[in-house]
Length: 433
Ligand SMILES: Cc1cc2nc3c(=O)[nH]c(=O)nc-3n(C[C@H](O)[C@H](O)[C@H](O)COP(=O)(O)OP(=O)(O)OC[C@H]3O[C@@H](n4cnc5c(N)ncnc54)[C@H](O)[C@@H]3O)c2cc1C
Image 1 (tube, rainbow, N blue to C red):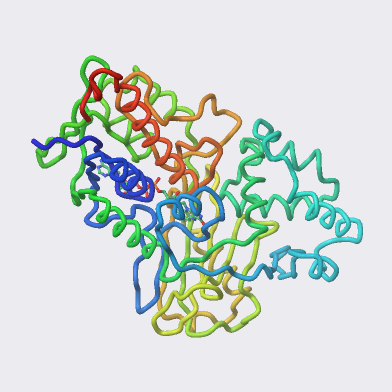
Image 2: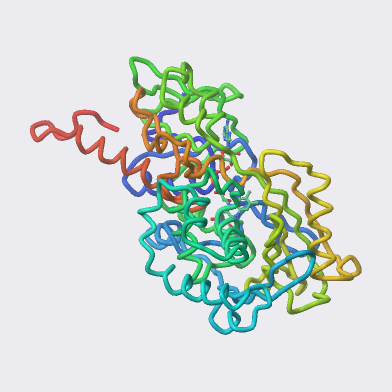
C-alpha cells in the first residue's frame, strides 16, 4: 500500500497539468494512467515519418496557453495563415477572412460583405459574457440578417468548438473562442505529443510519480471523505485527495455510490461531441493554394497543418480532415465524405499518399457549455471531501484543451485552499497532507 497527498486518475493534459500544480505546491503526487504512455487524446503517432495527432489540432490563445506559460512549459508552435476557402455546392470559393478577401469573395452579395465587414469589426470588442445563456442559433438569427453570412458564421463557430448543435450550444463561450482565433492559433511542431513530452519533463522535475499501464477500478470513500484508489492489478493507493480526469461515465463507475453524489447529475447532463478524422501525409499538394477549407453547406474542415508546423521528417505535407458528427453517424459514409473533400481540394492526392490515419468516431470533448446544463461540474465533488474532477467536460465556460487545463488548475487550487484553511494559528497544520 502506498500513500500520496494527491492521486490523479488519468495522464492526459488535465492529469499532467494538475500533477505539476500539486507537486509544485509541495504535495506528494502520483498519476495513474491505464495506457502504457501518457497523453490521452493528445498523443501523436508517427507513420512513415509523419506526425499524426490523435486529438488536438489548434492551440487557441486562451487558458491553456496562459497555464503553460505560468508553469514555464515551453512548446514550439507557429501560427498558420488565415487564407481560407469554403465548400459551397461542391465548389471551392475563397472566404472573407480579412478585409482584403472580403472585397473579392464570390460567396457573399454586396449586402453580405457589408454585414461581415461590420461583424469583423464588432467581434473583437463583443461582450461575449452576455451571451453565455443564449443559444448559438438565437445569437446568429438575431444578429445576422443575410442567410449566406449566417451559413458562414455557423461554419466558423462549428470549427472553433466541434459542435454541430446551434440550438443547444451556448453562444458566449464559442464566441470567445472565435474572438481568440482572430489573434491566431498555434499549430505545434511534431504534434501535441511534443507538448505532452514537455509537460512530463516538468512534472518529473517537480517530483511527480507516474504509474503507467495502471487501470484504476475503484475510488473508495468513508465518512464522506475520499479514502483510496484501487487498481486492476491489486495496487492500493491511499490518499486524502483524488482528482478524476476520466470521462463523466467512467468517473461515475469508479466512485462507489456515485448516484448519491453530484457526479450522477454531471454525467446525466453531459453531451459528448464526436468527430470522424482523416489524416493524410502527401509528398506534395496537387493544389498548393488549398490549405484550409471550411465546409459551408456541410460539416467538414480541411487543414494542411504543415503550412505552419514541422510535421514530417521527410518534408511531406500533413493534412487533417474532420467531419463534425451529430447524434446520427455513419462512419463509412463519413470517410467517403472526407475523401470527397480531398478529391475536390487536392485532386490526385492518392498518387501522393505516404501515410494515412482514419478515426471513425473519436470523442473530442465529453461535454461543452450548452443550454441543458444545470451546473458547471467541479472542481470538487461536494458530497465527498477530497474528491475532484478535471478534464474538458468539467468546463466552466472554456472549450476543449482550454477546459482541460483550466479545470486541472481549479482542482488543485481547491486542494491548496482547503489545506490552508485546515491550518490553525496555534498548532500549525491540523491535518498533515
Ligand atoms: C479529433 C480531436 C480534435 C481536437 N482538436 C482540438 C483543438 O483543435 N484544440 C483544442 O484545444 N482541443 C482539441 N481537442 C480536444 C483535446 O484534445 C482534449 O480536450 C484534451 O486532450 C483532453 O484532455 P483530458 O486530460 O481532459 O482527457 P484525456 O486526454 O482523455 O485523458 C484522460 C486519461 O485518463 C485515462 N484513463 C481513463 N480511465 C482510466 C482508468 N480507469 N484508470 C487510469 N487511467 C484512465 C485515459 O487513458 C486518458 O489518458 C481535440 C480532440 C480530438 C479528439
